Amino acid sequence: MYAISLHKYMNHMTEIIRLAELAMEMNVRPSEDAAPPIPPLPDIALKHKRNCLNFIPKEDTDFTLGKEIEIPVLSEEIVKKILRKCVCTLLGHIGYESTHESLLLLLVDVLKEFFKKLCSKLEIALYDEKVHEGSGFPNAIERVLVEIGMGGVKGIHDYYQSRVIKYINVLYGRSKELSDHYNNLLASKVHRQLVILTKYQVRRRKLKKIQKYI
Image 1 (cartoon, rainbow, N blue to C red):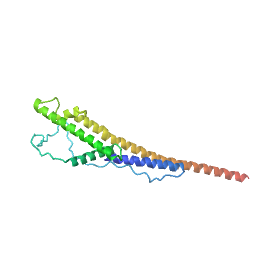
Image 2 (cartoon, rainbow, N blue to C red):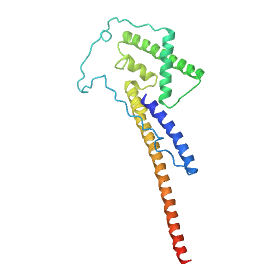
Image 3 (cartoon, rainbow, N blue to C red):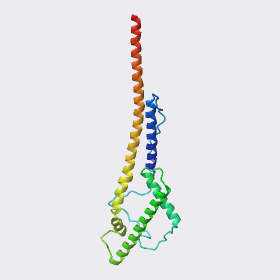
Image 4 (cartoon, rainbow, N blue to C red):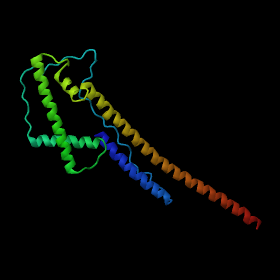
């Protein structure tokens, strides 16, 4: 969500800079209070515990122990709403502010088919593990993630680091550049006014000296 805030800020600052440049062409000084501050990074409390990689305590659950667990059943309508929200969040993360409903529904269908394929392959992988007792992978999920081209759990982690964490740093850097550019516009306008005022004062002094000799 922080990436969405930065995208909104950059779009807003781009428009402010455009208006400021138009104002400067008309010899009007842009307002210093027009530019908003960069959205601060939200203070999010980490819910997970940090552990030493050399010793991660084992936590057993009914699922990991192979016991039967109650699996929630979601209706088609609820699934569609969840997937729609996921697609909207992803589009907002990369900078899109609006789209057509038909395109949004198309992406929802694509995401739905992807999860169907993922679950189907996972079911096959679990069956193979029972029959053949091993597949060369640490677990069925790792096998499926590799087969569909996601590079396993490490691939997902690397993707998250590059396309989410580092991407936010890039957006923040661009926001800072836009803010600095606007401040430089204000400074250049003040400098230009001082130069004009200085030239006017020099010219006025010269005229006074000339008038003395007339």
